View 1 (tube, rainbow, N blue to C red):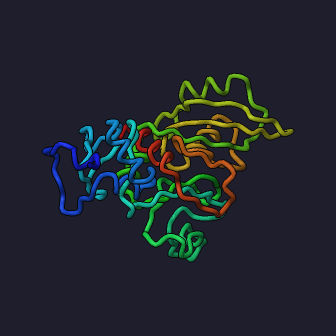
View 2 (cartoon, rainbow, N blue to C red):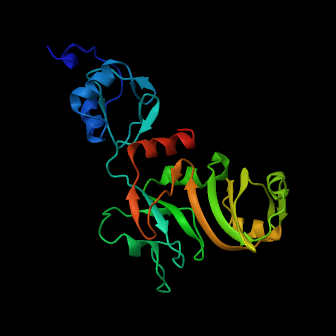
View 3 (cartoon, one colour):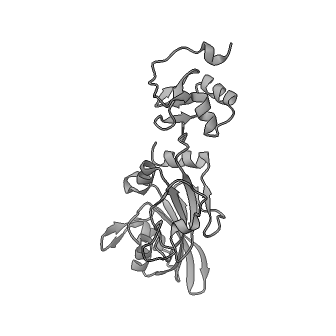
Length: 256
């Protein structure tokens, strides 16, 4: 007798599009169906906050599934991409003025229509996230969720020793105060310096305006991370699909 033949019936809601839970997990890349059955048997899977049992079904388009406490994206219609935006590219999917835009780098590799999470101005470069998951995108962009973003900037030097303390204490801009979460000098290059700062602000040109306000205008800006997702060695103009672990980490970053 198979394990799921012995499983007790549950009162969990079953939707029209529901499938056996182990099939849903396997389709999401968790492992073979037998391995997924074992995860369910060991009570390591929850569906909508309830510990799953063998024999349960789930709808990948509606149910929220966690494995070992981490959110698993099981809806295969949803796409999550990391992109290294080159300098000179506008942060729109298509540009009415005919400028090079984000969609120009996707070609026919992505069937679904995706949108960029947040922006980088045309003169800036680095990490952008592209997705068709509107709920996650909103949470990643909204300042109340406190998702940190890290930037590597080339600025006018020299850098005074107290600059980090000043930035972390807060600087008043024309549209309100801003403070960074961390700051460090990475390197000094004659009259310029490379600095790294992290903040969870999302206002327009916030990094450039902040550093210009304290007397260190930016000549080059690269975003190197958004929450747990890092740019790494992704080449300019290239995209890659996020792993299941990275998607789970993004959900965790916004408290889901």
